[in-house]
Image 1 (cartoon, rainbow, N blue to C red):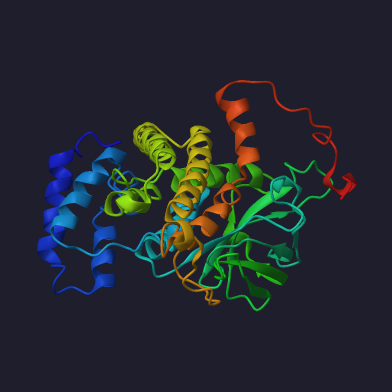
Image 2: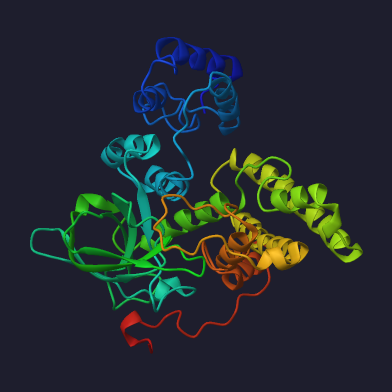
Length: 397
């Protein structure tokens, strides 16, 4: 961290940016590029990579100045996988060339990212993945396999990908981590229609996809270690995002309660009060978690936040449907669309109820996250595993 960068310095730099590139007369993309180059994209990143080597807590100083000037943002919901997962992984394990190539267009939103991790036979047990990456005579990697539940694959320019590079090693040790070009002719993206009617997720087929070794993140065979950085950041980005009081799922049901007293019953009153308090506790816990991030990378506590996020969303949306009675059974639109945004709280009560069912699966299933909290936060004994030292090729599948 640079001791010279304090709140006053960040404020000064932000005002200089606004003076040189007035939001009212500067194109959105040009402004965002200028903001990145000024070190005000993510101030805790290194100088030259969108940051100032400043404390993470000073980001809110820049954000407040920019919001007051009505400056455009980078539409973080659209590029959430890039911001929340790809960027910190590239920063932690990428080469200098990779950081310079990928971080700026990622943050500006010129290049959308997706995550090629889960597979039909490797969801909760992600380390059992079967997608293979084999090095050819040129030094490039040839990748074959299938991925599933891939958000934004239909929009993505790049993907973070883990693949098996040594089947003779135990499953956690024979994996490597790559950056995959989604425009490669061997990449096929097919929509997966969900219970909401949307095809927000996709399945991705990889057939002879060529990845240069320069697009590998971390050493060969250490992809599981690299992936842990991605997964921990993913859980913080899903469960620990900054929201105002009554933000998220609790907001719509609280609004309905206030505006429609004829729907109230003593039972729903008590349940709403309980869930409101729990949502506020989760929100404040998320604030504390973000303060801990100032000191370093996210830890297993993010798994606890993501657990709370999933449970609360499902319970609150269930209460909302029940509170609305017959209206709660209505569903406005089941048209098959491939959305550009993941919107957990959008549309109507029926959508929120159905969409929240996926919260306990995406970003790590609740069962897996309970194990992480038990073992890495509470220090409880690990579950017995009989495949720890068995070569992946010898595992029964």
